[in-house]
Image 1 (cartoon, each protein chain N blue to C red):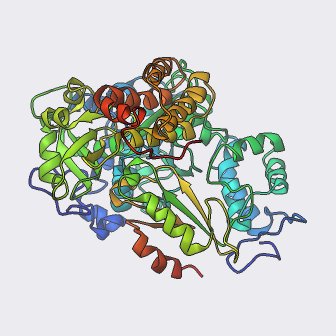
Image 2 (image 1 turned 180 degrees about the vertical axis):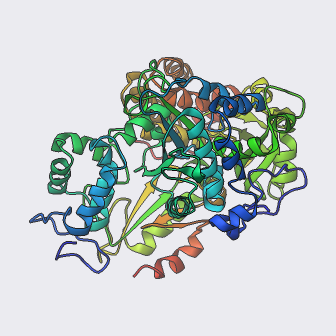
Image 3 (image 1 turned 135 degrees about the vertical axis):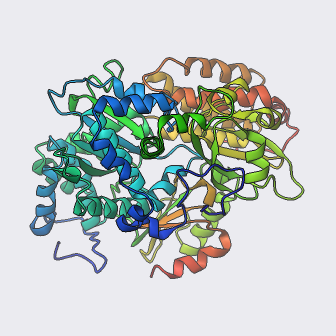
Length: 174
Length: 435
């Protein structure tokens, strides 16, 4: 883990790049190689590891991933930007994803979004609150339509959120 | 047991028997409930015998396409001269669908056992379980269950002392609806963008890493141990009249019903029973307006069509839609159909992988036209334009994502035209600001 890491394991420094794949993380990557017949197939898991350690995937991290997997940075960038869950810029300490696809939409998801934007101080979707605590985004179907509205706060999947329950939920994420 | 509601008397509880029972999650708890008997049995059978049993059961793919499972397995080469792979599709992302999530959260070993049996049957030593990135709880629970299964010898180089190797690898998705399409999923596992591949070659000939591959949905694989334990005849007998649709089906119901959640029914159950008895009907003072019966990719049904349908593959087709994943989105009389159809079109526009012109342009253009109508700027010609676009988006692309966008648009215009007319005529307040 990088010397600049915050307590939560997230590092939002942009430069200089300190390698992610050293020590334990390197060992985890090496173990992955045994699970797939090609190094390229380790790309998605490797990107998850970068995001876990640093909180987002920077240009220099893309370069490092390319190097450890014998790929080109351009190729890795193409893959990173295809998937919505990889952050290509720093985000708040807590990342909130709100489902607003039709099944949740008809159950009031838009009001949940409004409540979250207001209570977090983010103001608009994709923005980070001035205190750096939260980023809120809208996402397509989270696959829990019977529990509208589901949200993901970091890795916590929270069901049946309403505007009324938003403040209480946020208290759990200092 | 039921989850999040107790089982309804009209349900036929097979796969969902232990939903809501935390003890069923662990290896010991699962074995106590009859788990891993089917895998031991399977490992003593020939591969052909397992495939024949699954064929005879009539089991069809539960992910959406409804393709006969045994037949799919039989397409794999008989001789194993190079690696074969099984992929378990746990990328459940179809709006309205949340059944595989419950299988993984409550009975992960049921899925693992089904995967192990299927892997052996198709000559695969390795199974990749592709779980969507947002499913953090299923990822944690299945990961722990796989470790337990290894520790108890159900998986590994010598599964239950049979001399057969069965390995299981969890692969986490990273946010892309299209990766639920089988060839896109293979690309995603290979470390590529999730673009669907042109078929042929079909996965059984050249799939994951170019090797013979079978991809099955979580629910399909979870049904397999039950078929081996109780026999194909028992499974085939779970059918209320139409022998082409057999077994039980998990239904996810969401939207404007009193009791949203998962219900398990015998194929052929009247859809009306599901809507009113199990899901509790509409909220007080309201009536149903529309039902999307198979996940958002299938045509919208009116209340009358839905109430008259029998719930199986053919029964839903007869009433103008498809069973799909059985993720049922129910909308009552307060619903603005134009707004919801726009919201669905926006979903497909967002999720298009953008390889095919008809899809990349068509989904975005459809969304913009619907936005214009909702902003009170629609024109009469927009009806024909939307229908022309939909025609060009149907049957013309590598995968069916753009067909799925066209389905709610075309059926919506056919069945709820007056709601579009109201926006175009200015008889209804614009729902969106003009852009």
